[in-house]
Each structure stands twice: as C-alpha cells, then as structure tokens.
Image (cartoon, rainbow, N blue to C red; front, side, top):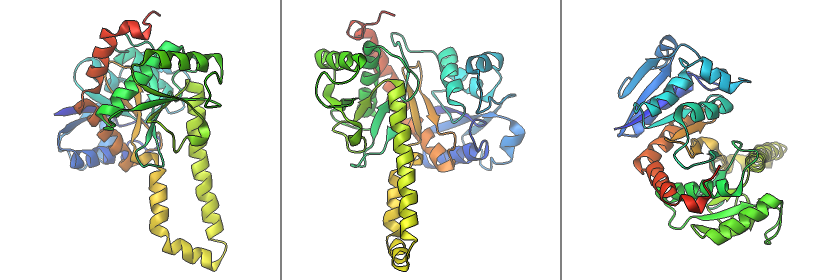
Length: 338
C-alpha cells in the first residue's frame, strides 16, 4: 500500500474539504492508505468513512498568513503540517499532501524532509492547462527568485523524468520562457541557461518560448526563475477568470445570448473544466528527499482528492528514486558545487 500523509488542517476550507477529499481518494484509488494529521475533534465532524484512513492528533495549525514560516515550523513540531512532513523522514509515509501556507510548506520541506542528495534547489512545479489537453509542467513557480543555470538544469531534468513516468510523455521537450525565440535573447541568466541546455544534451531542448504561447507551447515543460514563472502562472489564471466573466456578461446581455449560453452549456462547462486547477490537484515540489504535493489553498474536495492521486502516481512510478539515482551518478553534469 502507498501511504499518504495529509495535513487535514491547512487550507482555506480545512478540515472539511481535506477530509472529504481524502475519503473520495480512498474510494477511487485502491492501493493507498491515508494518515490525516490534525485536530481529532474537528476531523470527527466530517470523517464518515474510516476505511484505510487513520487520524493522527496534531496540537497546532500553522495559519495561512504566517509571516515567519521557518520559526513556525521550528517552534511547532506538533503542528499538522510539521507532523505530516516529518513522517516522510521517519519512513511512516511515502508522500505528503498539504494545502496550507505555501512558504511554511517550503520551509518545512527543507527542514523536515530535506533535499535529495546532490540536488541544490527545489522548485514548485504545477501543471498548467494546454490547448492539446495534456497540460504543461511550469517551473519554478515561486521557490527561487534568484537561481543559477546549473540548478535549473537539475530542475528541468527532474521535470523530464516526471513527464515520462507519470504523464507518460515519450520524449518530453523542455522550453525556456523568454521575451523572444531567437538565441541570445533575454537576461544574462536566460542566455546562460540557453547555452547550458543546448550543450549538455541530457534532454530535448526546443529553445526559447514566448509567453504568448503559454497555452499552446511547442514543449511539455516550461522553465524560468521563480519570479518570472510565478508571474506567468498568475497572469494566466487571472486572464482565464477574466475571460470567463467577460463571456458571462456578454452572453447575459440579450435574450438570444442567454439562449445561446443555455444551448452551449456543455461546451462552457468543458471550457471551465479545462482551465480548472482542481483537475490537476496540486504542484509538486521538485528536488526533495520524498514527494510533497502543494494543493491549492482554496482546494475543494475534488481538487484535493486529485492532489492525493497525483502523490500516489509519483510514488507508484518511482519518480524520486529514478531522479536521485541519475543525479548521484551524473553529478558532474549538473555542476554540483554550491
């Protein structure tokens, strides 16, 4: 059985949605067991099915607006988030899922889970929607505002393995987010990354990709520094929501518009589903000793169950051992000096 640790108390709608998501995941996935970390009294209000679900008491909840995440993790080892993460190092869990405060989760992952040997920088890597319906891995979404090219090489390789083993892409292609497609475009970092990815040849690199192609890119993986990629992701999310509001407003202006909307309801629902983060589940934190999935803070039960499904897929396909083995054997390719 795959053992998943769940922080039941982290998130905008915790613990209700996390618990219902856990029950939904167990119902749909036959080879998982879930440990729910949190307040036993609060969890009992919503947990109606204990099949393959165990409740482990936690005495503290790290708030969503935590301003000193490192201090919070160190001072509250009995928090639901810290206990869930610590279970990975103790061998009590195979993966962890949390929709709590992002920076606290990143800090906790570094302190309690730790990076895999030879891996220099972790990365937050959500899967964003794409026109072909397959989705595109986007990294790094906020973990590293400043980074070195060789660290991005590691992150890209991790994403390639994930795309092969979990997303079942035969030959994952990596693209570098930039302001133009020509070689030599962008900042000094972009130029260095372009040259490194081109020369190393440890994965297929298609070169620079402009953000106007974000939903229909010529690649499976888009990479940049944490500042740039996070802006790209949030701009895309905001644009999708805005377009939905514009469409709803225009269709409601006239009788025929309302009639058309009614007739196209199925198509509109498909559009909404295609752009929904709930379908993906969460963002993986690349480069750790064990899998940690960051679900959205506003996750509802369905989305949280998909985050658990995502964690189980990563464990089942042995993504982390495969990456760790390659990084260890090929450290010279990644420039493993600090």
